[in-house]
Length: 86
Image (cartoon, rainbow, N blue to C red; front, side, top):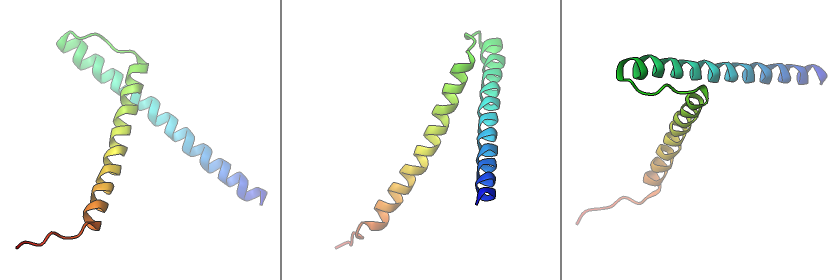
């Protein structure tokens, strides 16, 4: 039993570490991309790392909500009775 618990902890620890690394790498990439394109080319203000992370969370949230609403719409369309013409 203890061996299975250790494997679960190790598995979830690796997943948490990968998710954290992905968030940090994504935030750095967004910040670098913004600072390279918008600041250098368009003269916009640079962003902070927290702004890049917030943008990343919003983008992931919208992506997840899109999937939720598509499933909801498909479920509604499948459960509604067909409209028959005259």
